[in-house]
Length: 94
Image 1 (cartoon, rainbow, N blue to C red):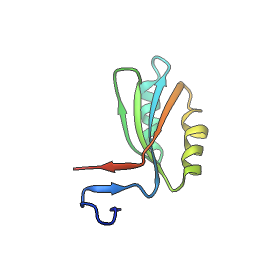
Image 2 (cartoon, rainbow, N blue to C red):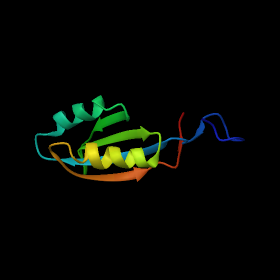
Image 3 (cartoon, rainbow, N blue to C red):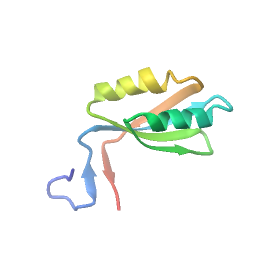
């Protein structure tokens, strides 16, 4: 999905997309990582060291669906302590 008049590698986000940073209970990282990977809306999932334990890229057909995914699925997973979500407004890939 390209922005009209923009270069080929610059992409406008038509679907609702977000980066969700997740803090987990100790020892629950692998289980949550695998559960996230099974969700069809999850496009990428990373286990990381730092402030957060897991970072995932999610995509849905609308903001309402995105909100529902975060509040009703991700936040309710056993072992998820907290989430921090950033909504993507534009991306550029090589």
